[in-house]
Each structure stands twice: as structure tokens, then as C-alpha cells.
Amino acid sequence: MPERPRVRRPSPTRHRVDTRKRLLDSAFDVFVAQGFGRARIDDVCRAAGYTKGAFYSNFSSLEELFFALYDQQSAYGADFTVDAISAAQPATARELVVQWAENVVIDRDWLLINTDFVSYAARHPDVAADLAEHRRVLRQQVTDRLAAAITALEIALPESLPTAGDLARAIVTVYDGVIYQLLLDMDEATVRRHFIDLITALAFPTG
Image 1 (tube, one colour):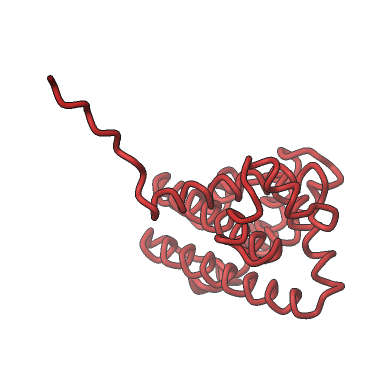
Image 2: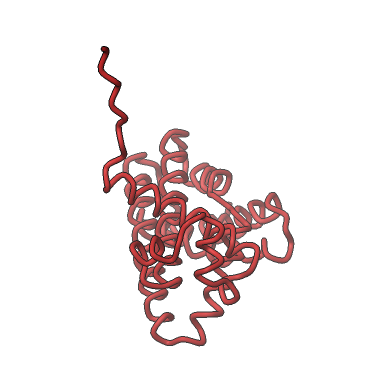
């Protein structure tokens, strides 16, 4: 009698990774629909098809889940945008700014979630401190990666922003300010155009 083929079961580690990803994906949908402040652990578990036990084996709270989602979304956005710039090989600083604006990830749903969480954190000082640190680390990571890409491209920089770090910080700062325009305008093309106009005026005031 032929031997029955063995069913390969996922390893505990792989199963945990899959569970965590499903919880994060479901939380994203729940937070978009309800807002962070109104969402509950039960809502996330129901959307993911898991029990609270599965949730607490991965996260201690909704706040911890949000920060995992924040780091995931932020890393994806930074990697995608910087890689797109490097692949495009812009020849001038102005072209680099345009490439950034055209490729930067703009997700209104994530912006809504993030804004909800900022409002929540403002009422909880311990959470606000954690959020501030996550934001600081993210900005530094994006700035460092962008500066490295600018340096590798060996392009001439504007006099107003003479180092790769200066230009990178300016791009990230203007982006942070402009992106919230999308919440009201709901017009991605306008937001990108506004970003290009502002950073161009800052970096190239005479040209």
C-alpha cells in the first residue's frame, strides 16, 4: 500500500507571522471604517477571524498594534520612494524633487488612520511620547536614505541647500506639511503639484 503523502504544516514561527499580518491588515480596515479611538480589540479580532487569545499572543494593546502598523507602512513608503528615485537616475536636484513628488506614496486611508491616532495620543501623554519617538526615528531613516541616494547620484545641489542632508530634510519637512492637504482636498494630483511648487521655491528660489 503506497504511503500517504505527508501534509506539511506551517511552522509555529510561520503561523505566527501569518497571524500577525492578518491582524495588521484587518486592523487597517477597521481603523479606516471606525477611526482609531472608536475601534476595539473585538472589532479587529472579528475582522481577522481570530480570538482575543491570538491578538494578545501578538500585541499587548491596540496602541502596540498601531505602532507595528505605523512602522510597516512607513518602511514601505520610504523604501518604495527612495528606490524609485534611484531607478530613475535624476540628473539634477530639481529632477530629483520632481521624482520624489511623483513617486512618494500618498494613501488617504492611512493618513486618516494616522490623524485619528495623533488626536488620540494628544489625550494620552504616554502614548504621545511613544508616537513622537516613532516619528523621530521614521524621519531620520527617510532623511538618511534619501541623503544617501542623493550622494550616490552625484548631482549638483542648490546653494540654498548645499548638502545632501539639507536637501533631504527640506523634502521630508515640506512633504509632512503638504500631505495633510489631502484630507480636505481629496485630490492627489493637486497635493503632488503643491509639494513640487513649495520645495522648488525653497530649494531653487532664483530659478
